[in-house]
Image: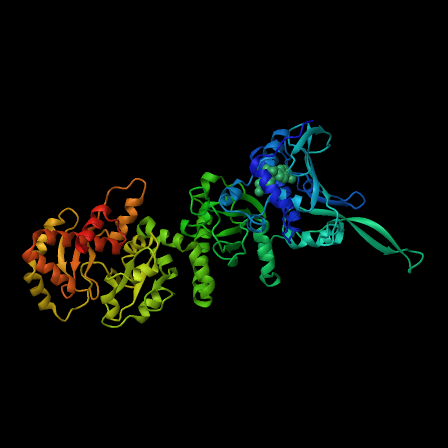
Length: 625
Ligand code: ADP
């Protein structure tokens, strides 16, 4: 039987696993048990959809046996099994394709990253084993097959005998060395403790033949040894247990065992609701977004159980899109076992549960924000975008659910602040909540447009994410206070020199009109600026679309060529203005040149591209000469 090569990516992963110095090797058992449990689930699903498949709970279990003499550890299950093709497809190539795709560009140094963050499923067996054999018989098939591999060289698949449907995974454990104790994985008591630690809540019995002793009847001083089969996991689902009996570690282990993520969740929420609708739920707020979170691949949803029986792996109806990052399980006796996917959306009980869950998540997040700001900021840097998308979509319908959860960088506090905190610092004469947009806090901080508002002593929120301004526009107001961009035409700040401003405008009208003519298609008007202090020019905008929004919309694949209405503002108190004025009066070419330069400067400050960089630099050279 010829040895087949692993697919290249699989080979790479195996290489990483085999040579890994990852210290937490015991997790291989969690991965194998989890695969077995999934395989039993699959058979169970089949029985739901197909009357000819009967599911008799007692026939479904996982069994772990150790053979010390031959250094073999076996994990068997009575799950759905694998056909020859499935053995090939599932174990010859990487199933959890995302994990490596994502890491492709990153040089993986010691594999710690991959194993720690993504887990490596079945392949983690190679952390502790020299050789792995899988014997499997698929449901509905008469044939059984044996898959064997000693690692990177490849694998073989041959026909074999197996009585019942299911899978045996047999590990030939490595020899122990000074640094690594592999013998521990042959010790029943040690194995049992690993099972308890990671897999206690698995719904199917995990059986082991435990060595025991009892006093010999005739002589109490002597003991005899015997073997007794024992179910080592409690099988009581975590959501049915008393909160007070559970530790943070229990929740974290459950989170990992269910493959919710490879991080530790920032927070768990354990709900036991009784009333119009009764349900139990254990929900998690992850620390980091899964690698596919901000892609269309990502599917939201919670596991749904009806009185301890799984009815759906991912029920999307239980979560609003803006909380799509939440993971977990919901169990309710009020949800019918036979509910169809089509019916879920209309199901009143389910709607009530969803609403309850939504409110609870919101409340818990707010509590986290108030009581543990550091953690909340970690959460917000992972999922704040999603909350803001939530506000932007559905025409601001979810504003009330989400606005209190937002954080923005504050010019005054130099850290992230909530809108509520901003409001509490507003002075009486301040009418608006001011914000400025740009690529980064640093860049915004240097924007000439912010000077005047800052000088007034007002706080400015710095918006650095593309979704920010769209969300703000959708909100319109917070607690009846309107949002105002520092670049908008009217800042709502009374200027003491109202009259003089009009006079200035009048005084330079001709010149401004001339400039507008030169820049005709690029801007809407040229005006004397009220907001500039140290800078000669800036761009302001009128109308609904801001310059930042224009940038974002233009970068989208099917951009509709929307443009902000730009106004070039000039600081009449700046020295440069005098030169401009002089040129206007004496030298038309120079005036044109200056106008063009000032406009391009304003664009650069705003982060807009200069339309013709060659001409721009030529113009600067001209002046230098
Ligand atoms: P993952 O479990 O994340 O999909 P694995 O590498 O652990 O990745 O397993 C790959 C695939 O092999 C599984 O998705 C499953 O289809 C199959 N598989 C693994 N173990 C078993 C088992 N005990 N019974 C049936 N199928 C299994």
